[in-house]
Length: 449
Image (cartoon, rainbow, N blue to C red; front, side, top):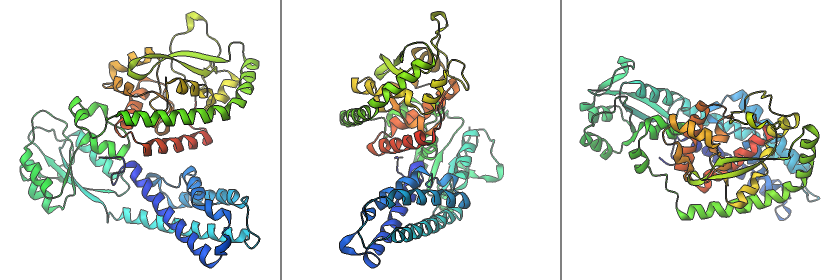
């Protein structure tokens, strides 16, 4: 399943954004043609769509999994208000007034919430939902049912199909029959998709019956693929080397590497030039707050498992040599200085890593690099952890925008699930999505420690 397949995590958000673009375009064209002077279109009209979309994105208007009408109204109102403040300062022609802009934004606010409300209601009634039949009756099949229930109406659960070897831990009343009758059951329930979710994976299913279902137009997917589609991460405990080989992703071509390198050099160069004036101020704050060097150097594991030196602004007290053992940062960590708390919260301690990007050690977006000691520990308990080193580590990444700060082996395993999803779905679209999500995190100061 692809990144933008129907019902996937990002697909649902993109549908909401696409609808808002259409609403904004209709309102804007109507306003320009009938309210404003067509020959002297105000400059705010040119920037209207990107500005309202950007602030709607920042205010988390596009969160179908968290959609509550009252909260949505507040988020939308804040986004429209911020849009007004930005668009109002743009130059205007003499015959245009602020009330024109106010009227357009008010209409956008109303139509945005009306159409999104209708979209949410249509999900509630499962009118467009795909019916899913689950092969299996164990704990894995149970988790599929839970995922369907949390899918914001994109999927509807049809029932379970039992096999001869899978244990039964699901509600017996929801078992529709045995695998021998799956073709008939799928036809009777008008199933759109079959998910293979066996807890006991030894033994093979009769492929001829699955082929018959597929020839009826029914999609056949396994549990890891369905889980990936709903959650935006890959269940490492449920995959094997064969799944990785047969997956449509995990294909990092020379072209993809070239595009990422060009974007890395471009973004890093621009940001470094913009941030250089701030470096002396940060250096002064660090030196005045605690004794020690301004910069912090540490060995990290990079592309293909090679070690490199990462650069950061120092945010902790200098530790004695005998105490410099690798350790996770914790809440209210006593090692963090007063200045360090601020720069870590704002994430600006990471700015020197732009130099790592220019050197080629890191990418702008990718899995976060870990210390060699942590990599060794995590690799013992997490299968496929070395596979995250197939691409360059990044300053930000999919795991960073989807999961809070990691401070344990368990957190590292959870982030691995997101990292593998990123590698499996690597594309320019996903890179841009992560970039804008990172902006949101920096503005709202989430996840720093």
